[in-house]
Length: 239
Image (cartoon, rainbow, N blue to C red):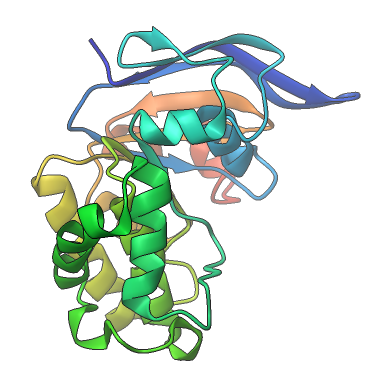
């Protein structure tokens, strides 16, 4: 049984169709990359999975349970964690306090109950030495690491990453990719939206291409990137 399945999920805002009968599933333990041009509906897809916006039609199934009518908070506590494209930590709280908030609210536990787990996540994401620093003073790389750590603190079985490598230098991107790769090796199922293709292909087993809210293709990264329509639409190449 897949950990996540979308079945003919559609969403429109007036005449604008942002998700058009999207159907795919993700086996537990797999990493799926999502690519597509700006405006393809990638972040909207994450909003549909997390429940931030409701689907008009279709079903979102998490671990065999239809969660289409379940609130975002409940979906989070059922195991869906998410990072956002623009990190917005609680700037006046320390790095560790940011994780305590995420862990307590995301898992429905007390801060004391999640403290040890949060400390371990800081270690895994390379932030332990900065645990007591105010989050507002972090570099971009460390804000990205904190965004990843906060998503992990909610205890996800399914981790959604939204362009987490964007804006980083090559060296910073490589460091972050290594952290994500280690999380995946440890068994975390990942769906990752990204424009930095070499970052994606270093981690994911499958790629899904979105175009105007429709699934253009899904499969092995090498097979997807070799397709003519993907090169034309996503890369802007006349194949």
